[in-house]
Structure formats: C-alpha cells, structure tokens
Length: 143
Image (cartoon, rainbow, N blue to C red; front, side, top):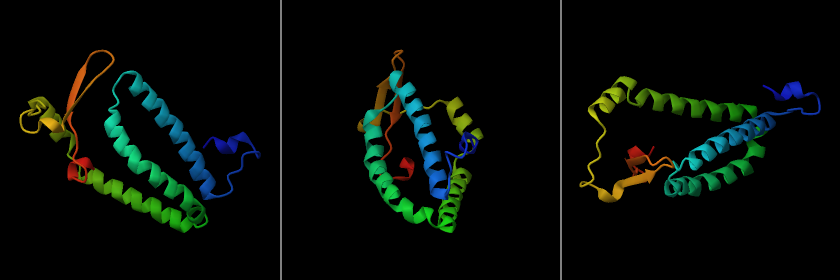
C-alpha cells in the first residue's frame, strides 16, 4: 500500500514485484518478533532448526520458480486461492475457542511418565519454565 506513494522511482510493474515487496516487509516483521522472543529465551532452537531444514530449500525452489509464476497472474491467483482454501479448511477443522478454554480451565497437565523423551522444557530469561510435548514428525499433531 505504501510503495505507490513513494513516487514513480519505485514502480511495481508486475505481480512478482508486488509479491517480493510484500515478502520483504514480512521478513522484517518476523525478524523483529524472533529477536524479541530470542532475547526472552523463549525460542526452542532445536525445533527452529527442524523448520529451517524444510523452509530454506522450499524458499530456494520458490525463488527459482518466481520468474515463471510472476509471468502468469492467473497461476499466481490460483496458487493464492489454493492456499486460502487450505487455510479455511484448517480453521474450520481446528478446535473451537470454547473447547480450548474448557481444556485450559481443567488444566493442561503433561504426563511425564508416559513419554519422557517427547517432553521439552525451556526456561525464559525471567526464570519462568515452560514444558510442552514436541510434535512427532509427520503426525497430525505436527501440522
């Protein structure tokens, strides 16, 4: 929304340019959030590594295919529509807020004896300790 107001020196001539500008803006936003959480000690770097192993090759494939996708606005719109339909399905199938609130009221207790190796703990900079179950790779819980 801001780039057209910068003047004719910053033209966005195609959908690919607009997409690149949006992704660059998003990158700075996520970097800001990551910095804040990392300073508080709330980043589980082992799980972050698992995401990085998948996301870097995917980003490279996306960067290489961008020149083909940006030349076809219809293809870009179809990809976007597919992603939005997937998100809509996820949101429709996700637990309702009332169910999540009820579970929180009952108490979220982790059975450490059942699967001790699946329990991960992290201590924040302020001393608060958080324990959680690590999602299994490829399971429904990891989505």
